[in-house]
Length: 179
Image (tube, rainbow, N blue to C red; front, side):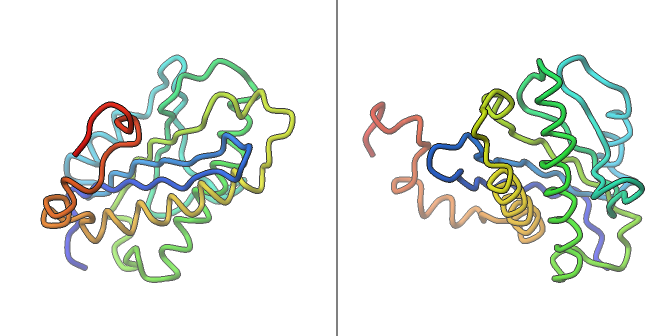
């Protein structure tokens, strides 16, 4: 296996109509002996409002490579923690295992790698009585697989970023600037 030292990836998968289940994971993958391993080890404690946890598919099913997940939004409720440590964690774990099955993540040398995944879980999900948990699973599963693949492929490339500099803009700039 070629050593993976420090790779980053992200993806966005949008929610079904009327849901707040957009998924936007940011992934850091690298060697346990390098800066990613150091960052991973330093995350072993907890920070108020930003729970950190190993990604498990279910009880006693810690994924490989060892993966730590944390939130981008501050946690305020037990309902939020339940969604994060339930549907979202399961979707993330399933996506990681499927990346191994599909050859996106190299099977050989998995114990030499670790990942950190920053999760976006909209706080409105915990308050939404009509939350579609299947859609929450779908968006997180698809986005995690895509983010991991992009990290390992180095996507988007610098050439792609330069080529689309004037054709792709952040959604928040829609009425702010014109290219």
